[in-house]
Every structure is written in structure tokens, then in C-alpha cells.
Length: 378
Image (cartoon, rainbow, N blue to C red; front, side, top):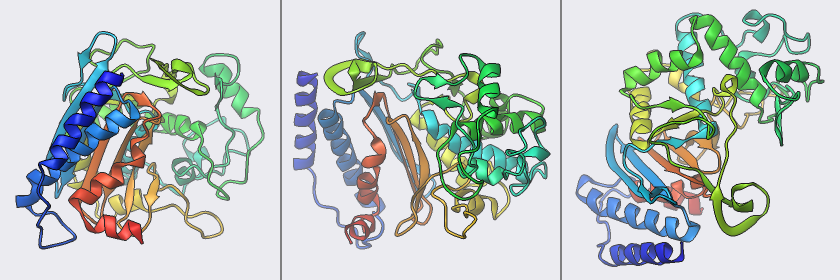
């Protein structure tokens, strides 16, 4: 790992030294003539980040004005067998899957099958009385107040879907619906049930028919590290050498245990190339056709006291202003940021838990929209 890190740093420094300064007359947008320079800066930045964070493998894709301006792959999808990352390598995006679920729910709204303000009991029978008044939008925005169906050891209840549902339904509410944000996997497991009921098919089939096919995504797969998914990058971690716990200097394999009924919340394996196809399809009206749907998808939901929540409809509000960001963040290793007001989107997928690309994507964005750097320094 030390040899790889040194080699990557030498490449990064040599690229940066050879680059001219951008000369765009417009400080808020990089010109096409400067794009080659900016892309080279991004490549050098990524190589340096991989070296400093010891990231085995990574993909990046950048979309500006609806066009892919950069798509690149680096490092190893599998370290022990020295399998290189390619543009087709699939990466688990974990909780960033929730953003895709948000689109599926808004599609049901557009089809007249679902009301975001309706109580969950309108669509699901047999719920505890305290659960029944919860609004669909509160599931999406994590303000339902529901107890969590998982804990630090995985599913509660002693094993299996039925036991987990029985256990979580027996628990008291964590809070009054709509009063506070609390990230929760029960919300998205319920949304999976709603999608299946209203579409008459499993949510995976709904995603494939109504999102992946229109977006031209042909290689998306659902599953966790216990499933055999060809072409998927192996997840690694320095936390307890891959076993969780304190960070160490030893790289180990990481395990994701994501039960099938919960994969609306975390379960997609996808490449950055296909992820940007999905973003382009979403922003161009192929997935949501009504003018106000995208705005609703990306607008922070409101709590009962009138304050804005941290989440919109399946999407975290990463920054409200300036240079608004919505996106998806998953597993401490994958993230995508959409800058709706700047016509920019960036996807960074890695196979290292703890690489947290959400922490450096904004720096990349500033290469393409220089005003982002000025605004975020204030």
C-alpha cells in the first residue's frame, strides 16, 4: 500500500505542475476551452486523494449542462487479485439507494397512485395504531418517529424478516411524527411495501422498468457482500481490519448484510457511468415528467413546527445555500452531489469504507464552477 500511495502522489504532483491556470472570463462557469485543464486538475486531485486516504479503487463521473465531461476509473476493484477498476465495475452505493427510492415514490405521485401527505395506513394494513397517522413524506424525510428495525448488530428480533417486523412493531415510538429528524431504516422498508403494493411488482422490478430502462442503465444489480455479483468491487476498510471498531493500519475486507426486503434503503450496486445516466435522465424529464415533481423531490420537507428538515423526498439536503447541493451518500464510501442551480453533478464511488467522498466532492465542484470556492470560503 505504501508503494502504491507513493506512486499515485508522484503522478498527481507531476500532473499539477504541468497544468496552466484556467483562463475563463466567467468566474462562475468553466469554459469549454478550459475543460481539458479542469479535467486534468480533477484527475490529479483524485489521484492525490486516493493516495492520502489509501483508497484501493475509485470511479468518478462529472456532468455539466447535461453532458458527461469526465469519466474515469482508478486503482483496484480487488486488491488481493490485482483486478483493476474499469468503467464497468459496479460499486455498492449503500444508503444512496434512498435517492432512487425517492424518485420511485414521486413517480407514483405523478401516476395518481399515491399522496405524499396521506397516512401510511392508507396503503399498508396491520400497522400499530401509533404508526398509522405517519405521512408518506415523513417516511422519505426520516421524520416519522418510528423505532428502527436494525441496531448495531443488524436486524432486531433474532433473525429473519418476520421476526424483525414483529419486534419493531412491539417497540414504542421514538418521537411524535414530524417533530424531529432521525435517520431510520424502518422508513424505507415500509416504502418498499408501498411500492410493491401500488405497482403490483417487487420494488426492484419497478426500479428496472421505470428508472433504469429509461435511463439506459443495463448493469445495475441489487445485493450485499454475501451475494455473488459479477463485476462488483470488493469493499475494504481499515476499521478493525474490516471487522469494525477502531481504525487500524491493516486493510481488511468489509461485510455488508443488507436483507432483501430493506434494499430500498441500501442495496444498489452500480457504476459511476450508469449513475450519471440516471442523473441526466432525471434532470431531463425522462423519469419525472411534471414540472413541479423535481422541485418537490429536492425541497426540504417541513417539520411540524415549520422548520426545514435535513432531508427532502429521499434526498439529503447537503447544502441549502449558497450553491445548493442535494444528493446521495452511502456506506462511508460512495456519494453523488447534484448542484441544481449550477447545472453540475459529480459521482464518486470507492471501495473503501471511511473514504467518505462526500467530504471532498465540493472541492472538485469548485474546479468546474469556480464561484463555489469563493462562496464556501465566506
